[in-house]
Image (cartoon, rainbow, N blue to C red; front, side, top):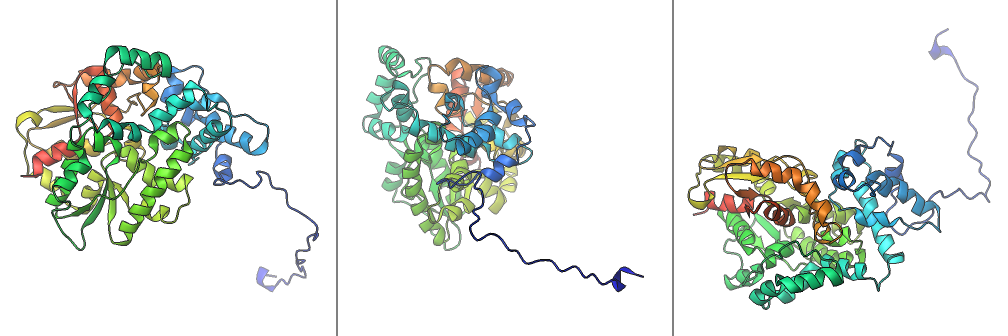
Length: 441
């Protein structure tokens, strides 16, 4: 008798649960996003630990696996559990996200756990708290410094003042503070009358971030001129900090404040047909990945879906490689560059972008100096107790840079640029500056 001739008399019973039964809630009701599925995906392969630059040099740091799924489970199941203070040693480089073979949201776990530690356990009267808060809110300091840029630059780099900052706040005296521009990017933008190109279908909203606004407006200007060269209408919306330094220091309330401003202004432009572009890979990473992971503002998902790193955007929408292949560069930019791909560029799949793009550019050679972390990781390398670790992490990059014939580096990340210059003395340029020199008359 065939299977099709067989008739089963089995009749499955309808579900009949006890009406008084209450299912067990393993993780309870959390106000933040439920990360249980991500925690359950971890099978303890330790790929994240072996990729962590901090764990490699700091024997007291337990690594991303503990800071991520293990500590997250403890915070959900034990009301009395106190977050281990080692979570503040995570540099937020996010290399662990890229290394994990099963997609565990490690950096999201680190950010939420670090925020809990700062909110519930860190003394708001401690020097560490105020040092971290000042570093995390660099935009506020830079805003005031930009009013007297030359004086601020001189004062911040005055030897005795740096010694006092190290002894009282724990900000390392080993680093030179970046120079403040005499004209901010938005001042320049307003003085030129805003957008010089109008277009109904090619529109981008430029999220310039803090550093291009106050310290390197030449990068922001290069982006504007480059996009206008390709016929784009550029808008510069109201914006706060992307939140990257705040995430790294557990200042989630501060990050939420600025993220709300950014999402509101950018989502309004997305509705008008704009895409968001960033000249800093940490800013694009923040808007694309960390905002949807940590915030639920209306428009967050739409902004994330329409955010790009600037060169990436042109490679997608224009024949940028073809234009570069037909161009050439002379003068001060006709040389060999030591290119470092920031960790946050690697996490977005952009680590080979500059090397591939400039391969055909006459007069220029771009040498990839390896996949190591620069070591500074935003505010991490500015902390007195982390300075030596940051330099040890960056040692491999420094050695590779010294093997390049010229003494000019290149990167998309402003703090990586600080570390590259600090460790080698090289001048550092942004890929957008080279593209402007090659393509814009």
